[in-house]
Length: 277
Image 1 (cartoon, rainbow, N blue to C red):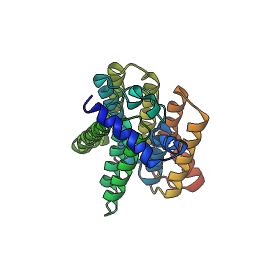
Image 2 (cartoon, one colour; image 1 turned 180 degrees about the vertical axis):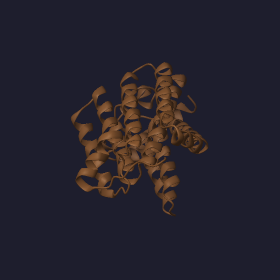
Image 3 (cartoon, rainbow, N blue to C red; image 1 turned 135 degrees about the vertical axis):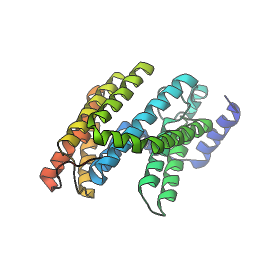
Image 4 (cartoon, helix red, strand yellow; image 1 turned 90 degrees about the vertical axis):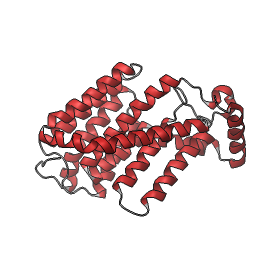
């Protein structure tokens, strides 16, 4: 580990200097949970645009697979493995690269890419830095873990920019192409990352079928509103706190990709026949 003692020293120093309550810091763990990611995905998919929802979902899927592969390949410990007093939150798997920092970078990129405003960059930067700093203060990551997560996040974002248009053109002519691509990615992940990937494979399969059926039969919202997104995010939040384990992933995938839009139509209106992606 590069500059191990120096990094441990600065983590101890920052924890003592900040003096943040452990409960408050632990609460930030929610922003590195599947529940939070699915709530954001539901809000974007239903409340902003179903196209951007699919794009964000694909980004998170690829980013998660890349991060998991990198963790297994690098096999590096976390700070609390060296000093248990530093661990203010539980964290599984390996430390490098930071999944939270990588996902924060993905969300930051997505915000800048979609929100054409001068506020996009400072808001995205503040979010990435806040989430990353929290991981240091919780004692679950070294500084180098954050840097690795940021770099991988930017690489995945760059891959998205290069491939999104060609893939969407293919899927608009043949909707089954999108389904095949997503399922192929899931099977690749299952082959490369066999541990604890069965539930994710089920969820990805359910979500892929939901995307296919929703686009084929026009079950998406033509004029999404904030109220639609809040309703969808609330449903995702309820599923997160009610269910757990394998069933949660499959239910949340079905909710976002298939069930939320018709429910919003029934309660709030706003569907139209399908059009090309």
